[in-house]
Length: 402
Image (tube, rainbow, N blue to C red; front, top):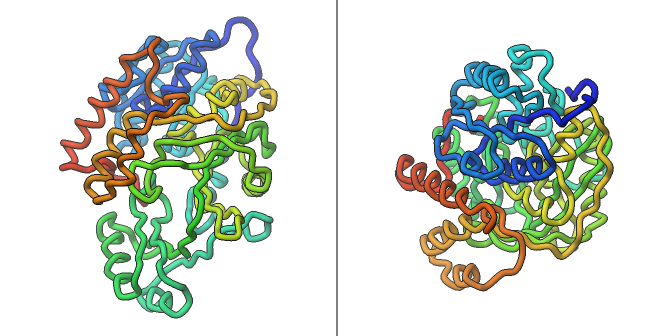
């Protein structure tokens, strides 16, 4: 589902969703600095992009997880009111837009994957199966359909293992199980917490240890036009678990090649990001695919790969020129590190926590002197969600894990 044809004259206005997240903030800044009027939508009135100097207008939207059809209808109305022609769904609302495309006006321009391609990439079991015929290494993964199959894991896997929901967001529904005796209780606690039916029970995956990487980019009709690899240096939680807060770009041709092979096999179109672990032998293994922008998008922008601009060009029917990332660029999520201090203290990881206070040179995801207000809005939004969720830094909305 791509933009149909390019438009002459001034660049058409865009509407970017999920405005509370720093990835959308990067989209807004990127496009505004190129002369595109960017309107923003979100369910939170404190969405950080709303308060950016680069934002043209803001629209309050329903929660797309809880009210998907109402969400798309509200999007259609917002685009009509703002005059935006290009729709950039900046998070997992991509799926909602794909499913309910008929509820949007025909003239809306987008660059999105097909629904079947999206579903296959997002499912933690299906993507592994789809890549068996490619060169891309993946962790050993087992689908569980009964208590007996779960019991067999003790015979077939070496512990620790990872229990992972099939479709979700971030670290929600993902737990490491160190001992066989804890597997059943952990597995069914996740099932009960998220109300998962047997055909959507979590998978069991071998736990790989080693250096963590992310790779993200953009495909046009099954062909890669941008590919950025970066190493994860720090996360919100100890031992590089959870969302990254400090990253550095690097050249890794082997990993990049595997990523392109994997996304080509999925016939990808549009933006995506992937997660990798390099094992003790240095072999990269693909552990997750997300058919959307990542929260760490800013590092790509800082390294010279303007994914938002390329995505926008795709939507209006232009083929973007390939771009190469500069190695050695660092980017930091400032508020994420502030949250990380609390998370590390909770876990008793005091030595790792002290590393957060070391001065770092590089790009900052969520702050600039030219546009300082969004950081305060981001902090207020996180604080509100933390309090309203009873003290969770990863609150879960109904429908987020499935």
